[in-house]
Length: 395
Image (cartoon, rainbow, N blue to C red):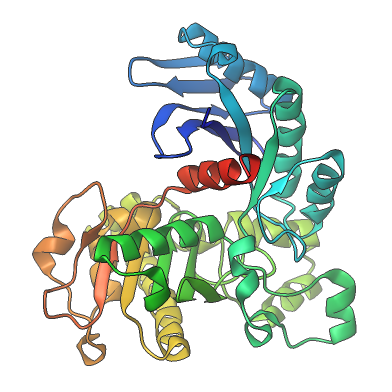
């Protein structure tokens, strides 16, 4: 049995997929959303069945009950699916979780306490883990951590220049996130090129509602844009990305409290703060129609990506591959063209027709004579979580 149930939980949602760990084939997928609201919703999909249902989902335990019911209503009750394990995506693993980890009571509690470093994510992961272990008590549960891939960063990349005693007391360092995505995309890029990942210097740009850049040398993360929290780095859908820390002090002195700052920087900044929408498609349409705020937001977004791209090209001593992935990276030719504009001096040449073409799998968008390969590679965090989960439980 190599069937893995992959769970990716947020504070008010739980995505799930049933995945064959050996080949990445999906048997079913779904989303439970609006958890904790008066009316929730579940969407369940297989090759044969698509169902959507509104119902009360007061907590994650109720969400898992709704998921089990959705499988049963689709004619595939989980008791007959041969689920070998449940793999959980966990955003923050701190410094101690550097590989997939079998979930015990102690591990679950530690994931919860690490919520101090990821308050928007880890408490939700914990709730989902508790609910899933009740729903699936007879199979192993495995945590796969977004931060694990970046634990290879050297001290000069992950250390903040603040008082070392304060940093040590509060676990302050750059952890990085989107590690599962950066890992799988860098390997897929190497496979597409027919080269060992150990031979390549890559810059991977994971551009979605959350966004991060990663410098990968020989398959190893050596730097990444997100930091102590997923707030640092690139401009994102609702998150600010890099800021002068003095800005927060200024707002605190002006009367803001920490909760207001949290809301401002995580929910009301980024593209949302600049242009009123965190949907990149809406932003591009508005910018194309002459909306000045959207045009500025697009420019700020591109500027931040190019700044990190340039830094990582220097840090890596050049690059063999630049990879675009995630929702915006995979689906916006205009964004890719803007990021790679005027990089001929570095050997980056984009083929306009390749860039504009729509494709479902990995593809090259650079010209045949471009010294640097520029690729679009769809990410697949769920397949990677399933693979790592199966690798641990079958060992």
